[in-house]
Image (cartoon, rainbow, N blue to C red; front, side, top):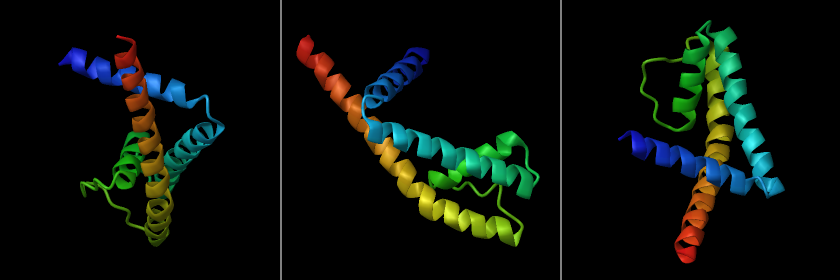
Amino acid sequence: MVFGIWAVIVRFARAIRRGFAEPEFRGLLWLTIIIVSGGAVFFRFAEDWSWVDSFYFTVITLTTVGYGDLSPTGALSKVFSIFLILIGIGVLITFVERVARYATEDFMDRRKRE
């Protein structure tokens, strides 16, 4: 099992490295980091959650998992969540699609060389 997790991490790192060759990907990566970080910072102070809870809530919201164990209580937080979802999901999906594309291309290139 540890080997499988390690293989996924290595593939993810290779895909990110491959994507760095394109300016559009670098911009998308930074935008993803900014949105996730911005959401975590907002919820940390607006909801007085821990950093881990704030980051966790942002990620599960943007990935549409939404366990329901945490939820915003204030009106400002609820409105922020709406905009975070509307903007962030599209960015995150595009980022994940690009990483998957680069991982697949890397895998196919390695298979051709064998």
